[in-house]
Length: 588
Image (cartoon, rainbow, N blue to C red; front, top):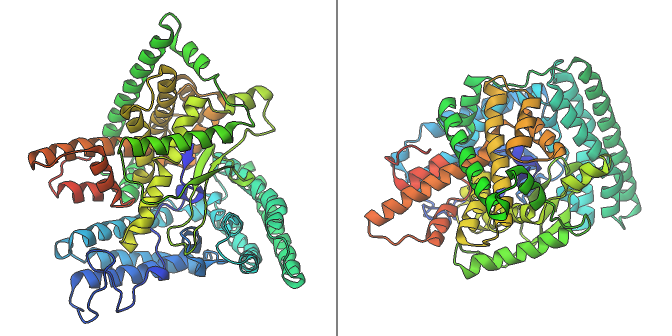
């Protein structure tokens, strides 16, 4: 339901670019940012970073949209080379980089470089898994739509209007060939939920380029305006062809979306670094679900112990802002949560930046709420956006009303997305001195931190109202059911309908949200990362507190949170080892 941005579901790997590539006089040392002696060619830290940066420059050539999201605009207007030769070259480059970086012994590196090595290696393994094992370019039509996202070019004024328009023209003109490769490659039998979601994205993108893009680029000179109109028309025509292709593919669609037990475990290991059995995952998932269900029963009893829990919850969630008042309510909540963080010294806030609350663009409304942050490498001060999606106008009035979040539910969405969730995390990334850590994002750490923040803020005392606690628990139970649905859909015999029923009964979701969540589990099994990451951070907090106590070091939440966020969004197993040592014990 919530996420950093559109790309976080499909491009979870590390992102760095040539803007990060140090010259001989500015190569980072173990401090991550201080200059080093260019003559120290035998310094293993310098040698590692030279190799890592060389690879990362190459990785952006393969995935330019990642660089654009980070604010590296020399990649504007480019699309991934998805020709057969392009994908083959990408695979070979990944395999070569993996071998070279694995050969560097971590014991030869300083503390920071060891973390950076773990970050880069995990990212490479993640990309290899998606390309070689999961075969996303062959099996998932959504894999081609991320690169066609024009929102970064119009949502922020990072460059003069003509420069951004020219980049759109370049990208739009390349779209027909790009989607041609997609239609020539995608398997005949594609899971129907993949097709349905891709069609939603394609149709939203068509609406976006027909209305939003031209409206955002007024006053261009005649020649550029003509070029833009022609390029957008060509892009629209190719998207319409892709839409027709997907409609035709729907006739041969299947329900074969499951990864299977072995590949599911491999996914967790290769993309997140978690080497945990499916049986252990089920055990901890059920335990946390039961913990939150018990807490929900207790919260409901404080309101009315004579009524069934589901009735109390149904009443509590009726306290909603109006459809027109959701953005104002979220804005007030964000202001209050930032003040609470400062008043209670829970975590450092590196800057005065704030996120603007806005209605999601139509093509991004597959998700209820998410943060679209300005990239950490932007060279000018730019806004970040906290997007909230309105109900689908095609739904019934009852479904639309149910879709609007309750005030208590919205509060924890705001905590998750803004303070102290994704937005604050992004501020720490931007301030990080390590170019590698500054540029990385890992699903379990990113979503785990944001989900952990919800529970942490309740524990810190943002309210004692049981109705507010119900809002937090609804969000927690939603993630619990995601966790169990991901495992059931991909390693067991759970159906989408059974997942939907579980969202309805155990996460107290309305029909529309429950269906959206169940469908998402078929193509985004890593949405178990919210609970996975939260539980790993809670255990890490306990273990760090015990370690610091044994060392005579005072433990505070601010000290722990600042230390945790100093590693950016590195994989949690890498962070755990950095904070506790190689004998850190199990992550869960």
